Length: 239
Image 1 (tube, one colour):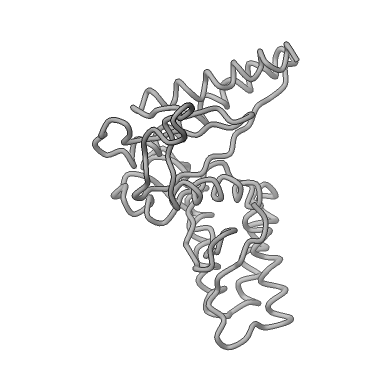
Image 2 (cartoon, rainbow, N blue to C red):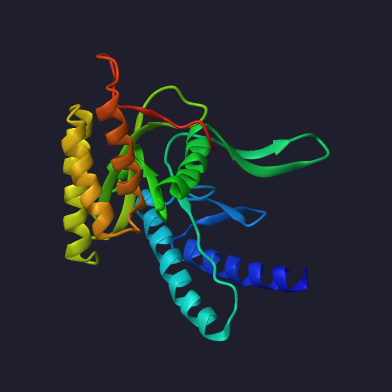
């Protein structure tokens, strides 16, 4: 227990530093997870951009820390991050004898669901369509999928945050473009062609789990086409 507490403290410190460097606030630590807020309790200009920068910086800090830990034989930490933006209720909530500063609202739930989807698509950072649209053209993204997360019936486009403009390798951007073209074919019901494109990406880079997932799904739909009113939304049933 003492070692676990020490390791988690080191991990939380790295994450906290990345968050506060971009004017974010750590709302609470939840087991091995963190809830962070931007634009509350103090208004922050360009808070959507700052949240993205904090997410990218936290992954950079973790990468550097993993190299240090690997050399000493210590356990390695990885992190999944979900980001969303929208109107929420923020303030001291509870009872007369016990309350806490917290945040409640659909964007909060969506951010939590997006964090969970990182495991499904094997990505580090997934953001909502609203957040992607609020950051102008400062970052490189990959459109991952059109999904209905647990607790929602409507479809939402989800995006992987790849990095800042100018900081992402050309090979990764080329693979991103190929993936998004295959995704357009998938939504146009060209399932066999989409499967071939997704599969090529998967073979090229086995770590591209999103391509593997989409290749498998495209092949399944090619063999058993969906109804004519299919809208392309994939319904997730697990958090």
